[in-house]
Amino acid sequence: MVFVHSESVRKAFKVFLTIIEKSELKKSDDTILFNYYEDPEVSYLVHLMEEEAGIMIIRAGDTLYYSPCVDNRFFGYSNEELRNLLRVSSNMELYVVYIVILAIIIKFYNGENYNNKCRTMLKVEELESYITQKMESISGLTDDEKESIDEKYSYNFSSVAKFWLNLPAYDEKIVQYSLSSGTRISYIFKTIRFLKEQGLANIDNDNEIFTTGKMDALIMGYYPENNRKKEILSFLEKI
View 1 (cartoon, rainbow, N blue to C red):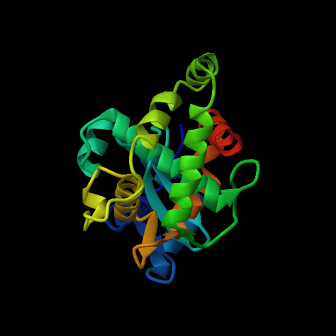
View 2 (cartoon, rainbow, N blue to C red):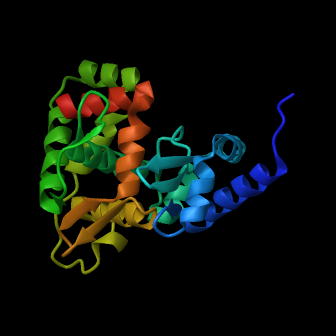
């Protein structure tokens, strides 16, 4: 039987609740609470709470971040929840958003496990051009090759490529791209809005995409550890 001090339980619960409430805990904001986490017994208890709650607490330097477990490919949300958050009506649109997220990961991070940040900013038009190039490469494969790839990665790349390439890049009539669905840029802005709401990315001047410290910690420390995720990232990067 493992004996745990009741005071450690109280400290762990305070740490856990604070991170859940605020999505992060910085040492500069609450040194006492952060130092609780440094205690091995408290840290152990917090990790037990993580497991029961189905979440992750990610440490990046002197900051602790909270995120849903990444076993789900859309950062811990069900398809129905994501459709509501993104204001889309079909799973096909979700798959497009996932491609945008994968492209952002590839453009910002490199290394065998995508554990190195290689840039600080990405322009929207560069991201759109990159995704279009990848979708054109997939579209140019033979039917047998498409079928083989879709089966290998359990992902309908060929349908996503067709959907993406059938969209216009822009529509000058659209005022707010994040609330529209008719163009490639619309889906990029929808994705950025979602990532921003999750504390993972920001956009300046409606054109310059930035990742946050939370995104960096999640991707470089945890996300690609899943072999399937890494395989899909590598496929999309190399095609």
